[in-house]
Image 1 (tube, one colour):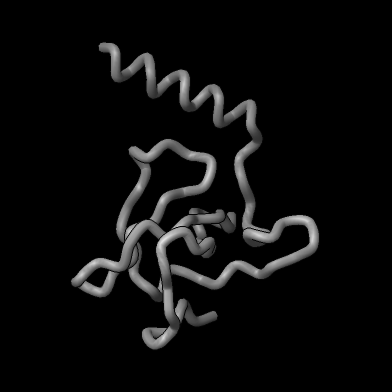
Image 2 (cartoon, rainbow, N blue to C red):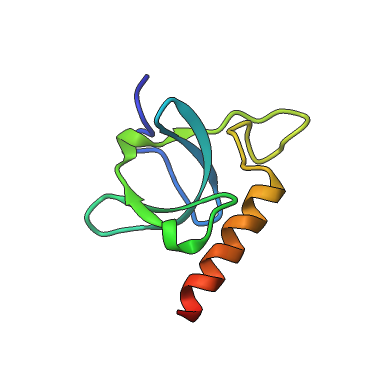
Length: 93
């Protein structure tokens, strides 16, 4: 499976997907960088995880009736709350 083609238009706010381990995850495009990489935000995670990815690591998220932003996996709300709470506690230290 090839990543997003160099000619494909990618814009901020667009939802793509990428693989972490053996799981597909939804990522939101933040910006295209001058070095050709795409800065992404992992949907459902804090912004501390935002990172640049090469186009070869990103894939167009398929659209479905259930999830207009793509079918890539999203963390459950309870996990996101726990993660956010841990990040807030860590920032206070």
